[in-house]
Length: 418
Length: 151
Image (cartoon, rainbow over all chains, first blue to last red; front, side):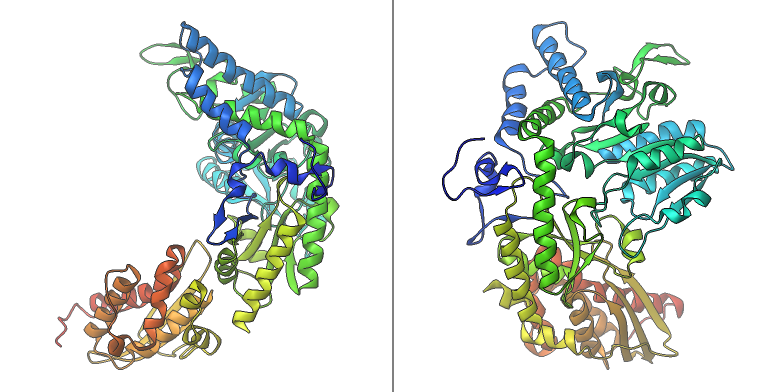
């Protein structure tokens, strides 16, 4: 990014002050206060490059992909398939055809639970999940076991917010057909040991599916090195447009799955009583896809790769360490690991006795945006005996000064309630 | 400051020292609800005598707005004729929708919650206890064979 003067803040290898200039929304105010956006685990902001890429697609190339013989159709197809190649490279996938485009992780995990689960699971089989899953990696499986007669099991959590792997041996057995696990908890920040979990699952003949909604934005990733079978990701949490994202899958696993949506463009041939489907990934992409959005996602990936994912991760660790130190010093109760090297930047906490919803309202008056609620992870909330937490989450554009602004606002909240 | 509109002294007082926050043994009416957005939960217990709400208590956990609203509600409807309590619940919801201008005398402390209207996402917090009360009172009508109320 561009060179900056004395005020430049370098955090973990990122020139944060300079890159903030790439995000137009960061110049806006909330009331009289500058926006302090600490809710990137919910959705991230978009740099000009992404906004321009999506707008440029509509302005200059707009057509339906894989349908038109005309020039615009060809350009749209190239942009869309180019985005698939970019995603494959970013994830370390062997070839673009291992990437199915979806509207994000929720659709990806539903595709796995239904497309794989309903075809392969039967009574007596088990699906292994963990108690730190987002609802999008729980509810689709509940729907699938209801239809197949399979059973759900859960890896419990330790008091420190880690997976309790002491029980892995009794939970992961020959009855386990698939182990579906988050790569990074959105409620606790915990990073799970994916390679270790994949090896353990493969040792009993189970597949491993990963909910990587929080992992792919924040960490370098290599699906082949991790040896996971399926991995869902979401574009809008990694600087991309809403409704972008996808599912990586090993070729044979994707081929063994049924599509969720029948319709245009996913078929090979249609007869009155049956149809034949295209090979993966195209059989999963029925109907007109979010084309401009996946093109925008490719621009987001280009942007992240220019920053360097190792730098992105280093920045995240540094700002998370700073936030944890300041929160704990100020008397907050933090849920999840306290060691920044084994966690991401989604920090869940209680501040004194002020309810998270009251905190969020008071912080908003200072321009500070945090999330309050159960974060679509009610099993986590129940495990730690709370109905809600406050959550601050960080991304490439956040500064330590913004953490300071949050702490000041928290103290103001405490003063109102004391 | 807008914050002073929502976190008024009377609201914080009801939050820190909730009135009638206890179970009501033998209550013939009991209703529970939660706000799935934030996990706030309220259970309302009510004891009726003839057509009057003789006693109302609540149990629950949640933010200052949901809990203070519940506390104020128990004070506002205790001793009221059932239909009047229902009418107050309807008008309270009207105030939170911005449609009803509260009469000071009838609303009492509840007027303090009017400032929450400026915070649309928090309106559900304020209304939660009243929804539970409404369910409890409506259920009473059905369960008792729907005797028409007289005022």
